[in-house]
Amino acid sequence: MLEMAAERMRGRANIKYVLCLDTVFPDVPSASVDFAYSLLTLQHVEREDAFLLLEELRRVIKPAGVVVLTFPNLLHDFYLDSFREYAHRGAAEEGDRARIYTPQEVRRLVRAAGFIPRLKASHEIRVVAKPMLFDEGYWRELVSLELFVDRRAINPCAHRFVRKVPGARRAVRFLRAARTRRVS
Image 1 (tube, rainbow, N blue to C red):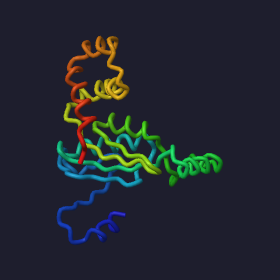
Image 2 (cartoon, rainbow, N blue to C red):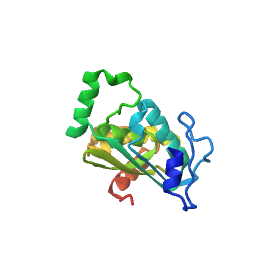
Image 3 (cartoon, rainbow, N blue to C red):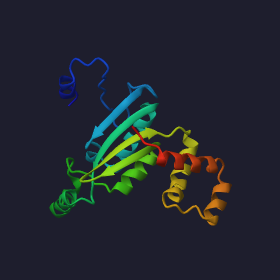
């Protein structure tokens, strides 16, 4: 596949092709990639491996970098039919089957891997994501707090929770700003 991609993009000097070793990119330094994309490829690995690959993308992407991903959408009839076919055929153990996601699952996994995702869902889920600029210690709190922000449930009970988590007020402001900011 790398040879085919290299052939298609021949003549472009600013592109580097690397082979993934399990779920890591050993030859890629941290924060060295401006742009990465995965078009309907993460669906062919187990969900846990897809998540580890997302975390590895977070490691290698520059703070101002962009990641574009696509996933099959279980909420669309085409992929629901595919899912039903896999289930009835007993294809759970087949290596080439697709793991089909919902937009909510994709949003949650991409955020948990350390990105701020913008999703557009039709028959496929298209994600344009930028890395979160907090260190790893904040990511779990951000993923938990985003549920309050996304559901607009910042109520008195939630405010008490926010006051108890160090840096949580700043994280909520960050999430609100990120939700309104356009990813280009």
